[in-house]
Image 1 (cartoon, rainbow, N blue to C red):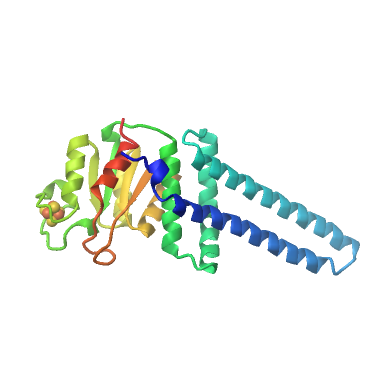
Image 2 (image 1 turned 180 degrees about the vertical axis):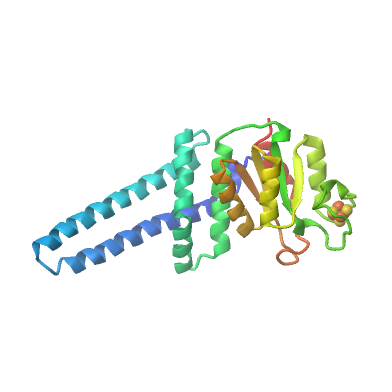
Length: 258
Ligand code: SF4
């Protein structure tokens, strides 16, 4: 089985790093413009202000550079120290809104950046190399995986699924049964958060689209619950008869299970 750490979307992870670097350059360029504007005056007070501004900008620039370095170290080394991991993760979350902004400026789609964020999160989670008992792990699946013609109420209890094989839910149930992990199907983000609270898992394998995975991962990170995200596939468009590659869910689970 290939490790998610080494092969899953190497190029996509670079998007986030590159946009972070571009953002730093933009930041420096803005500073240059302000500097030029201020140097047109020769008053003493303005010089003091300029020095203050320069110190502030340079410090922030160095902090951002250090943060990006920690992030890259965290991504390159599978067993990077928890401190490096924590700083890297905080930097990712800190950069996220700005990265979105810079990405839009350079024509990088929101989905690509979200995808990159998910890949980075997955690698950082996997790098922690923490293992859990099956009952401490929760597979959180979206309701849109269920075949729309299915009459069974699987959001109330996933065991109501008759495993006819017309959608991915049957495969997920097989995994849950084989491994002993918990499986729930949520009808939306709010319900998913409610279920996560109810089950109190120590680790989550979440299946969803880019947008829902990104917001879910951020929420769970804030609660210090590690998440590995698996993207669903949308051959019929968003939120309708979606599917997931069962082997990818197994692969994600293998990173957590002891
Ligand atoms: S696999 Fe389960 S959830 Fe999917 S259509 Fe069949 S019975 Fe319904």
